[in-house]
Structure formats: structure tokens, C-alpha cells
Image (tube, rainbow, N blue to C red; front, side, top):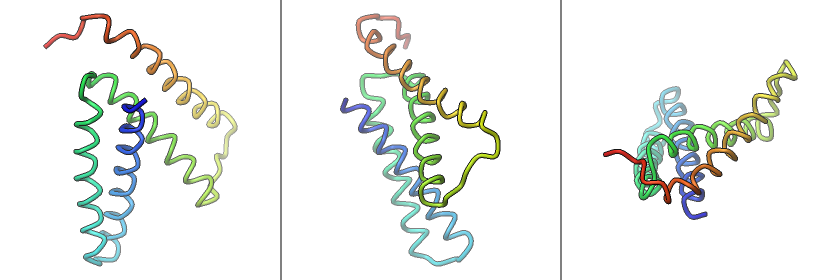
Length: 117
């Protein structure tokens, strides 16, 4: 459960960094550059925490899925954006299923010594 929290914070830090650096790029207001740098320092911190006792394959898949889901929900709720094709909502459902299956497989990962270094 702790690792999922780290992955969520990792995704939120990345989104925060992206949004504030975009704001800096378009306005040249220095505070947004600072916020973006703090966001990406947080990304490094939470990435290290997420990788502890795990694999890059698992963490990267979960990070991508959680990040896509959070950004999609934010776009729908905050920006009132909608997909044009109903099949795109199926894509979001598949992301949720992907996260679920990645999490299920991770339970077995620590009993299987197949991690190669």
C-alpha cells in the first residue's frame, strides 16, 4: 500500500512539474520555474522510494498508468474536457485494468527470485 502511495505522489509531482514549467515557458515568470524544479526534484525522490524493493518494469508501468488516469480525470473535472469517441473511454477502462493486473502480479514478485541484476 505504501508503494502505491509513492506512485500516486510520483505522478502528482510530475503533473505539478509539467504544469508549472509550461506556465513558466509561456509567461517567463520565475516563480513557475522554481515550482517546476521543485516538482521534478519531488519526482526523483518518489521514484527512488517507489523503486525500493521493486523493479523498473513494474514501477514504470504503474507510474504511466496512474499518471494517465490522474491527468485524464483532472482534464475532465477541472477543464471540462470530453472525448469525442466513446471508444476512448474504453481506453481509460483498460488503463484501470492494467493497473489492477500490474498490482496483482506484484504480490507474487517478491516470492519469485527472477529479478536479474
